[in-house]
Image (cartoon, rainbow, N blue to C red; front, top):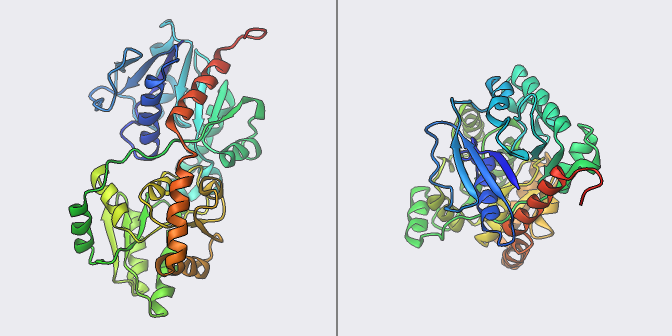
Length: 373
């Protein structure tokens, strides 16, 4: 099978990790009869691409910015007449028209549920337009969870017959460095650990609820340190102002971390909180499971599906309930042990090898002809 994949987002966080991991897993499948061409922007870092006869890296003739109108029409000449049997787009920003059968990975319907997450009305309209266009012209939609598949059907109208549910595999972070764990705890003035958040600061992430929950705990005499890991932007500045106004002087905005430091940040945490009321999957939860950190999440979206009973769930928007859940995960040793053990067990349900096999199956369903195999 000759397939092409848009790898321009390989350097991004969540979607980039998906591109890197699923590409490596596809290349490693012993039974795969696959030749996969990865299209990247000129000058893009490709050091992450594993050496494999199945993988070919091909720079585009010009830089095609992600989420720009240039990607609407730029793919036609690149893909046509090259012998490819399908084109896989790992996000909703596919071409306006595609000369090949199209596979689109659908992560979530955040821009449908939370239009403000783009930061502007125009950005929200653009995201919804591209999402609807990509999913409707896709021959096969890969949804990363049952929750995302439900949204694709109910909110966007994609027929169930065109959807394949392919959950992600576990994180691939390096082992934590004990000396670095201790150094981070010292830097963040949290010798016994901290409440950790990992992600971005988009409006739908529920971070205002998390900050208010931590403020409630402080008012109850439990001033727990809070560390927020993620690329800082205007939204993180606003969140910092909210935290300051609520008297949370132990809130640390740590910025984005490289994988080695991120692994140590997880290892040094006492509780991981995933406060978003709606996620299509959620890598941080699996990363917390891998680090044996008790996880508190929200009882909506894909979180219950991914947690599988191995996390404590609070109601969406309920700061008091989240505060109670965080305090229990922090101080109840019996609960902490159950969550840590349960998380490690739950992690075994996720596999990049399985994800690659299901992706290859989706490819085969994309290229199958009526009446064929």
